[in-house]
Length: 123
Image (cartoon, rainbow, N blue to C red; front, side):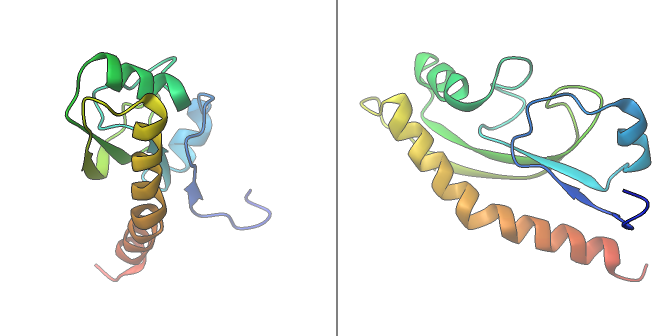
């Protein structure tokens, strides 16, 4: 990545843990997307349909998406932004996923743009 002068990394629900050396090299320059409102429904095993099934099983009245800095703790990095959407008792996990995906499509690019602008602005 140094060869290509990579200075920022965007992950979109990346499932593997990033090695510590990479986390340190890209401290506050690596973000990830999570399909729930962290810290709820995060951590090992909480990805894809598992998240939406857990939200449904918990009887939540809302769900959302979280953009966070990547850290050595699974889904444990500092939260950058969260967006919410209501869910109804009759919503299925697939319905919940669809609502959450709308948030991702609308807000994830905007958050990335804002983060990049803040990193590139003079202090």
